Image 1 (cartoon, rainbow, N blue to C red):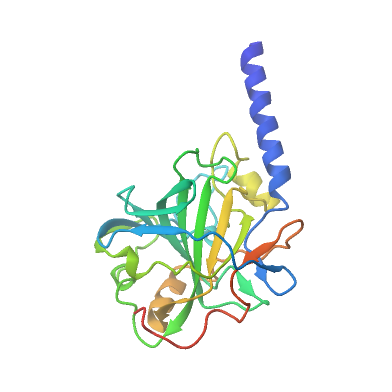
Image 2 (image 1 turned 180 degrees about the vertical axis):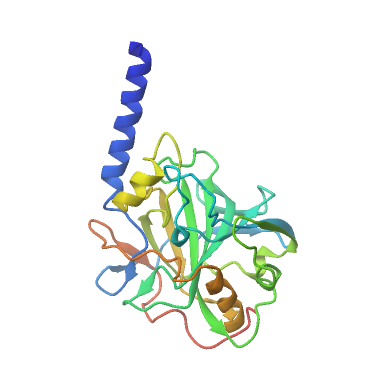
Length: 279
């Protein structure tokens, strides 16, 4: 092995080791409770730009024939139903001076983030990437999350996905999807620096998938914005998702050493009221 190649390998190893060391104190999800919340009514607002008609590639990421984790499948608990964007301009958020593009959104049951230890039935994450960075770099992703509660009737927009949820390792194309009808409100949020809630291979910034799983340390590259107002799915829609991921696909919560959750709302549970207007 020549000196230049050896030096590059050492540089990558040092980069990964430094990232892992920092990441262990910045894991997600977390519990939002009065002890960790810092009220900040002047938080900068996100500017959200969404299309009202786009095409999604909706994939079940659980693949029993997968070999990505040292020759074995990614555990189903780290998989989901993911709706990938086919248009890079379908969803944008701007947090001055940075613009983020919507990459995909996916679901967990039960919810991953909690309020004073309490879960909701599900949670959805809209994953945005900083246009100026490579995924894997520090602060390269912004995720808008929302709790999902049981509504009285089907959510008609999400029904375009949930009426035909793909089986393991398959996908379906969904046309004429209106993102603006399902995107969470972002005027009242919980915000904190954290991590992905599933392993991800983002070379040269991450350890191997097996190392991530064994250490329970995932890439800490996310700025989290969790909406205070929940979305709604019907019980039958929620059960259809649960059937694909028996036992759930939600990661446990982590402590918040050296971190603060900034919020412009009061902690009062997962939203207010029983409005089923998002259906």
